[in-house]
Image 1 (cartoon, rainbow, N blue to C red):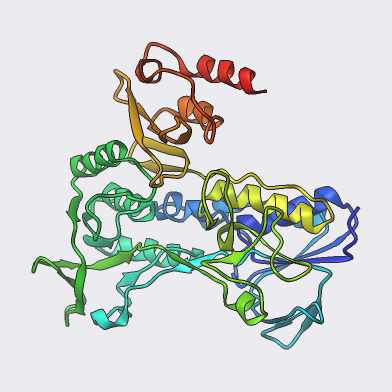
Image 2: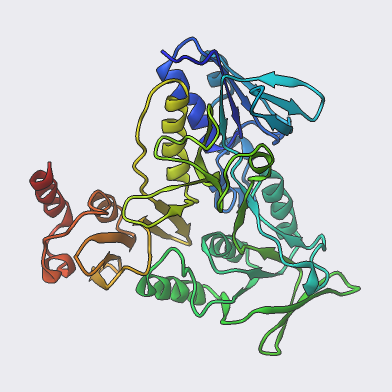
Length: 418
């Protein structure tokens, strides 16, 4: 049982909801309040760039929990509520309507917001320019896609490319501008990224790589125009900006909580201030196999970390073992990855299947598996994902040979270390 009488969680995304779930698992009686600015019931943000951009999509199909779940678990949900300040000495919160809420344990799960283009580029506040982070963003973009024929996307990360696939399915002409030399630099190896780039090209998406934005203008006719660093210009009916996110740390910082590219936490999710925790995208935490602190931006991490931190806020002391993973559906392909791509990767091995599916294994100089990725190889990626962070005493030939199933190899290796 917890020593806290009232656990307050700020943020109604997957990290916040999972924190409430974890706290309730530990203590059936502790009072739990879940507070969020969003006016909608908690929803799955991964659906926003996937299912929600389909013409027939409805937001209620993206709910994280059925509405009755909160009542059944005695969790007080306060939507459309903004926290103005945190008083850590008094252990209280002030809301935008002047209410004061006392807490015994506080979990910060405010997540992130979309990064916008700098105002120095020109007319970046145009109503034809969209970001995609909230339900309101998705609903606005869904309507804009209905009335458009040409779309330009800035940023070739997962969000930008998922929007590109959704727009092409609607028949829009799509162009993608990326400042880097290739797509998906943070999340995929070169081979996987090249295959996805080819997939988009095959579906008619035009990629502009190694190009930065020099200017943004809006014509009298309502179109938006981008000036690129090579002197070219792209004109479209609307633009989606997918250039990363910024952690919502302002409340924490004003309250004196340590911040370093996110709210700094230890392995238990504890911040620098007693009785204050942080979970999910907002948390900057130690990750096994990496130096310093890392902020992870994946759904699975937010779910697992949120649950763990919620349990700890309710009185347990569970050490969180972070493991990054992601998935993305683009056209008819499923892209998955486990682990993080970093400078320590010395070798990338590719297993190719006759079907066209593949798996990429990324190892450091000591043959520690740093990451595994694949296209249409869910069973392989899920199995090998269990070995991320471990030495792989398997030959290159075995890893690359499509005729040697990976699942038995993984089972054998796990038995050796168990």
